[in-house]
Image 1 (cartoon, one colour):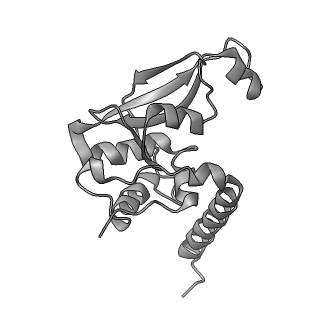
Image 2: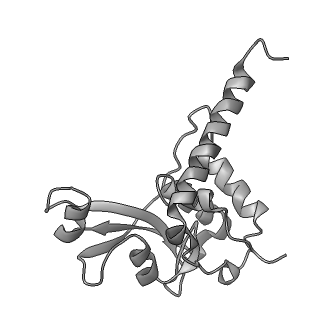
Length: 171
């Protein structure tokens, strides 16, 4: 079975808020063949777009690098240049890519992001060989609004399920 892309709302979840946790899942699966890194932007043009002070150091994304320098995150494999473009970081923007020791977010009682990330890698057939991870195709950026709507619906389902699981009046 060839590896599949993660659903758009899961790509969004793990590139916008839970990227560090997804890196932990990748490191668990692929071990020392990967290293986790953090993209930090220090360019005033990027800060201005986000309404940050011009001298801000903005931690944009945590992802993994393979030995060939390919970036791997919930969207798949791509060059670092393509990853940066996906995050709106223009050519020539000041930035650094720093080694990162990622930590998984703790479960909030409703949802365990790390357990979920592991299950996604398994259910979508992400292979033991990193070179066979699907190449990122830019679908998330092209369908961002739809992905956000799907993400909100998935979060509402998780919250409702958690409420039912804890309701002592439910059979």
